[in-house]
Structures are given as C-alpha cells and as structure tokens.
Length: 128
Image (cartoon, rainbow, N blue to C red; front, side, top):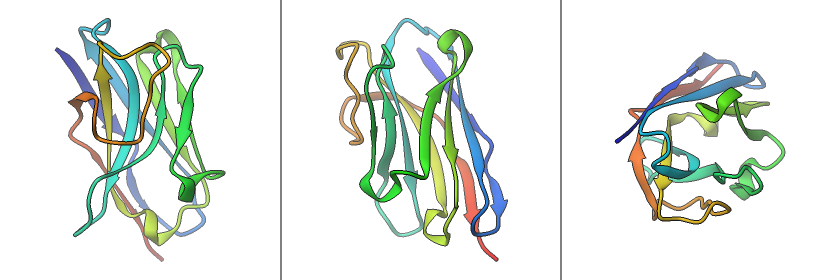
C-alpha cells in the first residue's frame, strides 16, 4: 500500500502563490507516476499536472500551463505543485494520486485512469 498526504492548501487572494505538497509513504516502490488533480464544487475531478516515475515526463492541463509547476523533492518521497498567480477558478480540493506500478517509468497522465492510490485532498480557496 502507498499512502499519500497532501498539505499546503489554504485561503488566498487572487494573484497569490501556493506550494502544495504530497508526502508519499508506505510501499514506495509500488507506484509509478504522481498526478495532481482537483475537484471544484459541482464539477468533475480533473487532472492538472503529472510527473513520471523517472521524472522525464511532465504534463499539464492546458489551462494551467505557465502557472503550475510539478516537481519532486528529496529522495522522491515528496511531490510538490507550485501554483502561481492563483485565480478564483482554481478554487477546489486538490488531490495527489500515485499510478499503478504496472505502468512504465515514463508514463504519466492527467486522466483518472491508471492511478491506484489517492490522498484525502487539501482545500485551496482563492477569494478576495
């Protein structure tokens, strides 16, 4: 089992920045990519960024390109999502997810398919 715990969310003003973190523990050899997803009230969960297990592939939702950056921390036990120039439309619960270990080391996707483990989420609210 892989455990994921998100942190770093909060209430911020438009134009602010946040750095979300996803702490990975447990069977840390048993996953592939890490993805960040978000779900706004009344909307479906959508993938915003992902990074492959070998870190060579990073993908972003078109609408967040240039503002979101995904990266890995030391020892690959943390994955960060830097969000700049926050907008009210970014308000959502942000989740990190770990892909199945059956996936290739260069796989990552911003779709729900292929992710086997999920965290509980961290709330991001952007409001003036």
